[in-house]
Length: 266
Image: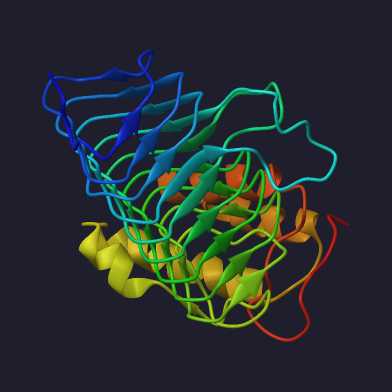
């Protein structure tokens, strides 16, 4: 049976694994499922429908599964809810809102670390092994791929995609897509590459050189067709092919590497 502090309030219909620990003054509403090994330190509030995986650590002040921040949304509608994977750490004051569309739940993957007061908006999708520093704001419907590292007080606009391994400097922000392994150093400007992240991920040296080449080609500017056409010179290389597919699917345009931000798809 789950270890529930006497001051916690747990709805009888909530499903808690036998070794879940629920700390003082926590509220767990109906339609919540929490898997084995997860600890809620205390003073958190989890609203359903929400499913939380194994071995998560949830600290005081965390609020999960509440309605989207939209004046047009019926706050009593359960929607598609929120799904959180395994082995995440949600520090003090983190908020994650449930989905407002019928496309599926807001989703947080596994092995992520969300620092104090980070926010993930409705319908956002966060991959695995991401780090969000204090005060990070992820807008609704944003797509954050694996191994993304976002510095403190940075903001991602709604519907923006941030590619695998990208890094955002503290205080930066983007209303345009951020390519994989690029480093956002200003508003909509990627002034560098996340070389440290590539090396730590175990990426082959030759692939790192290919990413450097891609970065230089993107920096030359031009239309979407020109950038993709240039990358096709090395389309047989798997990591280059990954970038080609990423750029082809871009809907908002992507961050520039210098000068004025590129907008639209042209």
